[in-house]
View 1 (spheres, chains in turn yellow, purple):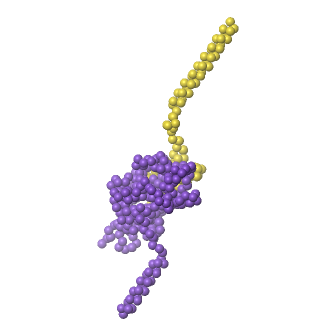
View 2 (tube, rainbow over the protein chains, first blue to last red; view 1 turned 90 degrees about the horizontal axis):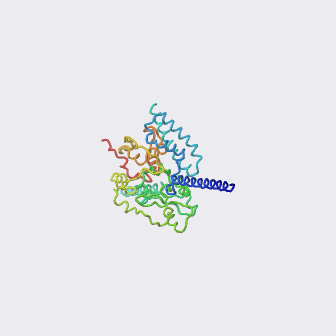
View 3 (cartoon, each protein chain N blue to C red; view 1 turned 90 degrees about the vertical axis):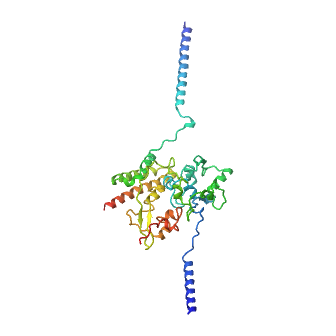
Length: 119
Length: 268
């Protein structure tokens, strides 16, 4: 009687374990299928500062059409970016500090030009 | 009397000759394939490599000035960028395109600097670090320039016309570097009055300049004055590389091509 009960218990434990193993295997293969393979590894996400840089400095073509207030806001955003760029590695700092200088310089130039026109 | 005239004339000639020789040496006019050439030696010789020889003509035929001098960040004066091998390896400056992956005209662009260099890589290094060496290039200037419209000076090529005719198509966008931008609204041309009487006015075309350069390449770094007429430009300053001379001494059509700028007919 005792051995029959023990056998039943063992069967139950074994079937529970094997079910768990099978479930885990199926779940992990499903996760693996949804992940990109080595060929489809996505490009690293654009960092927040770079997104901001692109956003601010992609408007240089429109600089002449901005109001003084809009230009002042853009200059302010450039100044905020400057502090973030200074924390980058030497190469990126050199590249983006130079680019930011040009971009900020243009906004400041147009702003000054607009203020001069008013006088 | 004749003898007196002869002596005076001789003295004038001698005086002119000596005064000319004291005012400096005449610069050698670069040959068409040499015009726009830049030699970079910030770090090369320190690393036991010959200086880099950069040919503007081949690069400007593929990309607008803006892509390199704004989006990639090359300075407007030779040597001011201070490009290091590690910058190129990280995919910046020359490495933005010279990464061994980018395709231009169905050709793979060779990679710039790399950390490990073996004997076979030597040829690749030589393609840029070529000062004082005879290195075969993939591009032959004469074959390249042969079908293009001609100009008298500089590279001997009318680049503007070449683009108009569709013979070259400089790209204005580089993935990962150029932020998408709207096309710039065309600005009106304006004329500038030269100081010398009788010299035709300069017609400055904003449109021609912004197509390749955008705004921030020139303002405020090169042209600081915000009010038209507030800045005065002299030919001496320009020939020293200031204002228009930032490009029109080194890469764009040179100052010897007077009527390309002084193009407005003189008022009768």
